[in-house]
Length: 512
Image (cartoon, rainbow, N blue to C red; front, side, top):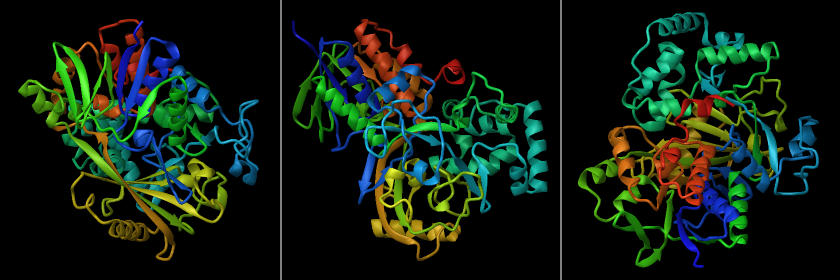
């Protein structure tokens, strides 16, 4: 009996999950993954620069979906022995009995503490904002009073949620919105939140609000455990020893062991459709025929590569916007930031994984401190700090086209201006540019339902993942779109609404 041929476009989390799940659950399929680059993992890859590793965008491994969690930990078990920094700092944490020793084995998930803060007015604020004395002290009496009355007003007078700006104001009040959301969002998207659909907030901020923050604070104060945990409020996550790319490289190896094929440097440029089915895809002049096609390539590129697409659908796809970004890796000898927390760190650096930069007078959007993601990401974590400075831009703009030397100089100058490093701190640097990192929620996005309806007419085409659905999903949501796709294929389910509904239903992301 002939095996059905499945062509998967993209070797990122969604594509690899779909391929691996399909081969694990059935022997009826021949699966080929076409990856346009020479790398595995998409934007969840890890870049190794002189043994200092960069996590592109930062990826916390946390999910409320047990299938996702099992997928991760089957590939890379949770640590059973202390990691390098645990040992050095004599730090105790709950470890997995019988789990691997990260000092000896590489295929291991570390248990990490989540610390993300906002850097504003040269002070640290918890992210998300917490209602504690330090917050009010840093804000000052006047700002605190204005923010309090502004929040009370938002509880009484609700704005129509027809923009991301109103979405935030309804949950935090106008003052906190202007302090802690507006400028960062403008940096991220290049647009004011008043121009962006509220859909982005409902998927990324989810159920988070001041009331949720206060509720969480009291639970911690009185040691009350509950089922609900907002994703933005989690305090612990797991993380691959050498970054997210390690997990997806492991997944690729497992996929190939089961008979799957990954072809790198194969950018799909044309999609051949006829009579309501996808017949084949082309990589330049090379044709790949198949029975089933799973696409994680950007919706814009998918539709623009198809033949005989109606003009109105083509117009929607062409107008779908994206944000690209540049990560500047800086290896420094020290930070000028004091660790005033009670969290122990190597070299007593600040404990943050991410630092969100709200100040409008710098272009920098976010800082990653790779030492805090995993001590194994840095060649010498005792005497060096490895930073990832994230700049949001658009492919082809002035920042994107900046030469690497000038980009490093620009980023270094901004950190010095902010008081984060001294002018002699930088030892080495590396720049990575990432295209179509963030699907955006403006321009023709308002008509995306028409585009989805058109694509759903093709019985043998499934769109998965962040770019594949033009939805700013977390990694686990991207994986779930692939789980749903595989279940539909195995059970011959034609309705694809379950795939498109991942990360849109309120109960999906608010209940445990």
